[in-house]
Image (cartoon, rainbow, N blue to C red):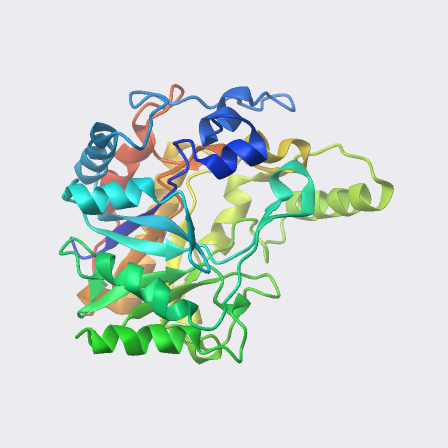
Length: 368
């Protein structure tokens, strides 16, 4: 199978001191998941885990069980969210244990979530929890950490270049050669280069016309809200949301039909002048974190997810053809339970989302 499905992997399922200080003793993502409640008729909450249970990512068996499920259902590898704040790391335990224990034997890469943490989940966007900065000398310290991962035999590479995902490349100051220096350090280590992928989104601060603008090699097209979709429902929700902002009323959450978001979610990759990859979202409901300020996809089902995944697979094959090493497709996400975008088994659908991945790979990857 040439198309490589890489699933974003959230490590926030174990307690850390910082989260306990910010959100309460012993906080993990499961706290938000378990306390969620329906906010409108037909709203399915809480979404509770199935066979893996309310797991703890400090446990080796949990991580092995996740990898076994992923492999069994056609997921190529995990992309671990990586948090680095000028030398300060957060939520590093799962990836560190994976590296140190040399298990599970499953491909992986890192995604640097390079943004300031705020209280935005709980309606306090101006409350800074930890700031993302790029001070002098930081890139060298950062690379010394990253190289341990890059040199692992399981690390995902493209023509020998370690794949490194930068969540918001345009947040790095233009006068700071951070990414350029990372590349130099990788070459000094014997790698031909890094293969740096950044998020492209329709938001003003998320778009770029060329990869050279922000120093990356490729972009993952990420359009969660279905922006550029002009259905009546989209128009109605946009107007309602604007009125809520003007009047101060909170009658959310914002709702979008899953089918109305699909075209914008997985556009034809040949529309982009730079190397681009689709990002498929199985569902979205971040009300466990944001309550009525959240966004909910309605009418999402495993079957619809399977259909959009087939489109993305075909897009990938058409764009990259014989370039087998570049046939990446990103899945958002493996386990973002408090955002509703996960494919792990739950009590409602069991393994059905995972099963659709296998079906899509078998029927949607015919080279054209």
